[in-house]
Amino acid sequence: MSTTLTAQSDLEQWLSYLEKLHPVGIDMGLQRIQAVAERLQLKLDSVIITVAGTNGKGSTCAMLEAMLIAAGYKVGVYSSPHLQTYNERIRLNGELASDVQIVAQFDRIDRARADISLTYFEFATLAGLLLFQDQQVDVAVLEVGLGGRLDAVNMIDPDCAIITSVDIDHAEYLGSDREHIGWEKAHIFRAGRPAICADPVPPPSIARYAQEIGADLWQFGQDFNYSGDQQQWAYGGREQRRPGLAYPALRGANQLLNASAAMAALESLRLRLPVPAQALRLGLARATLPGRFQIMPGMPCVIFDVAHNPHAAGVLAQNLDSMPSYPKTVAVVGMYKDKDVAGVLRKLVGRVDHWFCASLDEPRGLSGQELATQVRAVLDDPDLGVPEVEPEQYHPEGTRLRPAVRPMSRAVSHGPVLVSSYNCPTEAYHAARAEVGDNDRIVIFGSFATVAPVLKQVQN
Image 1 (cartoon, rainbow, N blue to C red):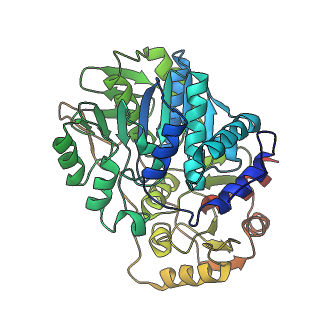
Image 2: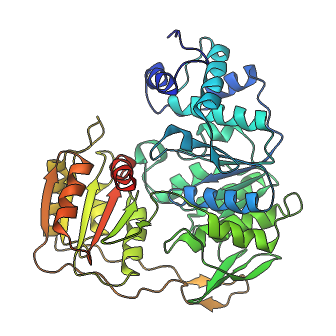
């Protein structure tokens, strides 16, 4: 496909072009992007940290970014998907890349690729890497989009690789069991380089692959861990211990797991990237990431969370349980057809008094009516899910610890559970908002396409 677009064209015009450029949206493989990268003479001299995982990638990247910036480094972050604006995918020293910067790279890539077709994601990946090269960042933090082995990000050899968690998602591309998914993700590891695994119960394939290639595997519970009480927490690694840390600004039961993975990565790179304790504290306090158990100020309590697979929904349920009880909890939810919708819903039954099911107006989206039918089926199932329990944590020395975040109460629905359907997420939110009082709670969760429009409206 030829284009008349140039470096002076609008970003939206380019994005529309890129959406139609490749025959399919997801086309796993490294050959196309590596060929174009060679034509562009892409070569990053930065320290590279690659982050993969089913959930927790974005939070881990955000904490790494904030801690490294606080330590005085120039940092580039590439992540996906975006929540509200495309520019969120590429950050330079904590600031979103501008339209002008991104479009300049798109034009450069399009001219270099010639007859090679690239996906939307591959264009984004190359644009981020080229910007990081041009800006001469000290550190590039790269979030894997899907899996690891065949993801475009994996064409770059990381100095340190992190796997945050392994669970079943994108089964059509990665496999239907944790063993194979772990193997796919473990391919971001490199021989002789630190490989951080923060999953408390990782599939054996991760350690097996690390051993096969000779990666330096750091496993949670063996090589690093955390402990905590109501006031503070501590990180314990192979050679470093960081006591007296304030809790991360990012909320949620799994954020200490993500924070400890980020700190293990920094410990493993300490000879190249020294980060003082004060920078760690400042970074954890400043890290932000919209849509991850994001609680808005004011009343009623409004929570946004892009939980769209069972593992993430289980964490959301755990986080809701850690809050004080509310007279009523309502949920605004929208999901894609290719997700384990029933698995997600089962994690939250018993916590929601009224389900506001929203249609997503795109090919993969479920209609509000279809989603409502699935909610009712789960509610009618006598074998409902139970709350996930945070795994017991251990010091590297083996001392058993109680979880740093302990549930205060469980939010249980009051009376008959209601289920309604709506044409879009914002319509569902307005209906939910009209039903609740100031002392109640609204949870907006599911796909990015559910959370983004409601968050935009609430923020405006």
